[in-house]
Image (tube, rainbow, N blue to C red; front, side, top):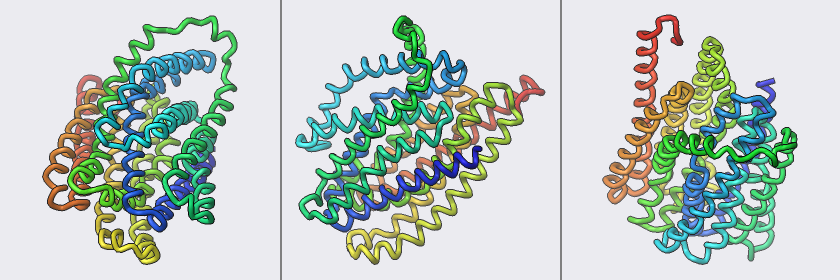
Length: 420
């Protein structure tokens, strides 16, 4: 059953990835590097803003949802939505600062808020379906949100020259996210919601969850900045065209992480967490080994495939701005593999509730990313940006692995019969 779910999820994510790749190629071929750069910055700011809206509360709530039976899950989901409504009231006006600081042009403010809200709700719904062990349904919703609309938009723009600009991207993105929400709601309605209106919001639980999630929010913020900080340094020292070239190669390298996350990690993660919480340490270790070996092997194979495929792709595009920068893809593909390798020790710390150690590792990686980007980007441009991100993820992987070793060594000293 797991193999079948994994196959379906990989197929759906493969279609989603293919659509993203298609959009990147279409924009590289028919739009300017500046358009691609604006799209990359817009997407990056959306992803960072999503973290602000979500507060990483799902990390706390995932453990809670797996601890209760099906009858108790609607209340947890309802209370999480109440929290998000309060966050919207506070956070959405503050996000106008993005435009006041000229990180994005004011003409995009309407698209920004529309896409941000739709993307946030569809993202949280996707996470709920993953936690509830419905990966196929989650990935169908993800395909609508991030894949199906791209095929339609690219087909329209291919035949109609007037649609070959970013407007078609914003329209399609909004429609796709809205359709994803509709499908997610359909699946969540299967839960026992009857009688929930008479159950008050558990404010004490929400407050406890917020305090718990704060550590994950800081850790995730650090990791997100490690991943995307390079683009803002490139914008500051160069221009949107340079960012566009960087985003083009980054989208190709991202194939590795997306496939491995969907086809392996997101399938095994709920089972790993459940096994550990149930005290099934033998099952937990088996699943962790399967995830580590499978994800690293898949990452290396996919990285090699991307490295080979990029050569004829650039020849077909015949865009000197991209062809001259091709060597940067090698650095990015190594970074993708290192990032995948860091997830094993991350989840080992997560299930042990070593949240502060996770925060410390991510904070150290962010410090390296900031320093390396500051030192390398002005001189080496996109190569310096890619190298800075690689150094940060190398440190993250090594730190988290060392932390797991130390934590388990202490556990064995305190309880020789405990988890090895």
